[in-house]
Length: 423
Figure 1 (tube, helix red, strand yellow):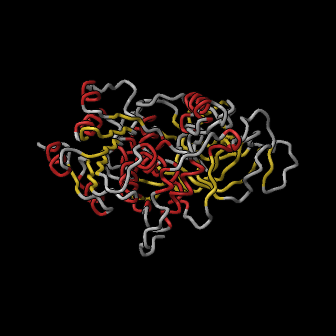
Figure 2: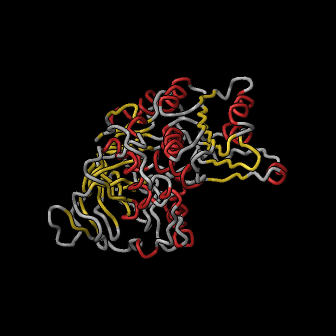
Figure 3: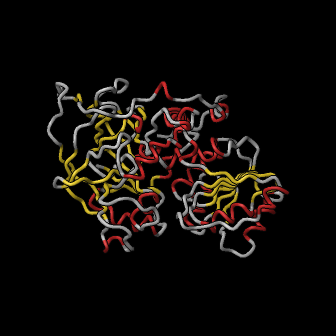
């Protein structure tokens, strides 16, 4: 997919700084009714239920090793046709992410039973009423915040913070409150509006971004979470400028995507931080200037020595308080610390407020890379095709749906960056 690195295009940095006004005029209304049209020429009435295989979490928390405890059961579910403002997607590839793992181990409580999976790509198979900007056969990336387009954050151009979308995700429903999945007639909850560890999914139109047909599905899936979250944390939330020093703490799929984003943004010094040697080695291959084990004595002092007193921006994507504390400590006076790793809700950070005041430090959250998916995914795909954002290097392995519990173990143990389930 990647060819020779071309000359750096003049638009590489400028688009990262663009903003866009509220999205209300571009959003599909929240679904309120039901009918669909598909490849078979439906007449507008609801067709019969579709049956699919899906990975379902029936209990939580579940402890590792997951190959033995088997938290995800592969079940045959009934999938209703898409309602108004919804789309049926044939899932082709779905990435395994720590956000999935956090539901399994109970760090992120969700209602069960729930069909998991949120980072995916596929093909449009049927359209609900009111969806007129997609066509059957379109290739799409699935996004896990289905923005309504009308709440205050959406109107301000911050769809990642959509209030109805967040409420629906917490309740395990689609944006309009519907549940389209059933097992023997009983509802099965949607995982953050997607439920992609399945042969097909019904999602809100606003959970989809159309992509080029020449993008392999296993690569395309990564743009739905790892790339959107990691690159966005650097280019949207941190707004890294050429010449700045950046540290990325936590080198999973999201963290390594952030590292790629920092490199594409022209970071002069790029420090990669992770306790796992193989991930540090990969970070160096991907362009990091330095790789640090945070457990080593003097790790903080080493970063400060390398960067003349601390980095301009530290981006924490490990999802733990110790990682965030380390990120804050290696940030220079007047610098920025970004956290996008989603630590458990019960964890707390001890922070001396005087450092925020006397050193004019900034601590900032980043959810899904502060993204506007319809703007950012095409932009990141363009950088990928230009050889400037080699996200294919994040793909560690692929496998089938039946092997998903063993793949959870590899993720939990840090043996994989991104494992993709191919349908």
